[in-house]
Image (cartoon, rainbow, N blue to C red):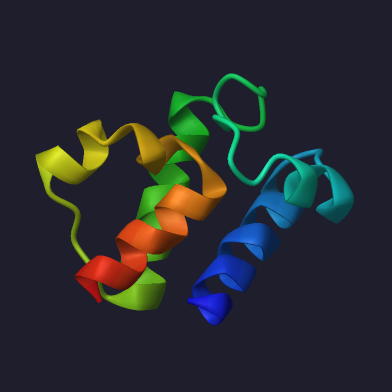
Length: 81
């Protein structure tokens, strides 16, 4: 899971204005509520995850509240890999 989490952190660091320390401090916070990404950027994130990890998410996974946190997203990716 460590590599998956690192990849997500790198993605947010490269695609948002948040720095690594802020992301690490908010790893369990909702990234939409924090203003890190909007719905358009979310589509890019999902596309990048699907391309990188070769996964497809179910509707149930998208509806999971933890999907909108960095740590929860990493766990979900690991579960579907």
